[in-house]
Length: 282
Image (cartoon, rainbow, N blue to C red; front, top):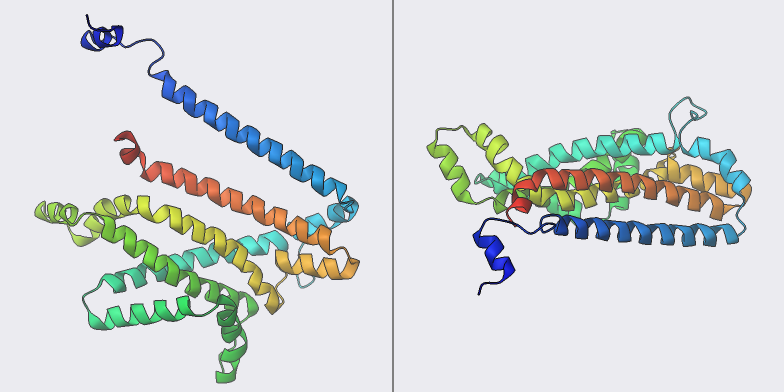
């Protein structure tokens, strides 16, 4: 005699709760993860409290570190400047990365050579050296750039080289038959790239690109060597002035962490968006 499960399957009747079981399991998993985060956060906060930190000093300097006040020269500072540098560098690096990826995929020897040479140089030299070359060495040849422009240019060129390989791998992962089918339908190259290739490639591009943007956010602290009043610069300055390095540096670390969590949330949303079709097919 068939089992109850077999009879239910044959009759098209599903046992109550069978559909909700995976959802309940996922919800329980998320609750356990959130509980783990809560416990670890409480332990971390307790440990920091027992260090005897000067929370009054943190409260006094926090508005400046968050960029709620302008710098003495009337420009933005702290987190506001860090976000500005990161966002602009993200946009420029994406343009550079797309052009470099297309060059790496090109059959033109000149385009391929320029793209590979650029990627090799900027991936093969330290970011700090690139920042110093752009800011300190270029003036030797009459090219004088501000600290802000130098920092954005260095971050964009450096991360553009890494992002180019990420984008190239995502494009090549799309089956060639997809392009051939689109061409057979009479679609143009731009339409094929925007409507066929890009949505499928994004599923592969988003996770590593998100990790690189988070890394860029933290590496934006390197522009502090050029005297820009961004978050890391303020943390070090206030630490030297008050002899309370622990308070200032820990505050900066927590702010960087919160900003990184924000980028992680955006990355997760993009992953879910571009992975819908693949997740439903599992």
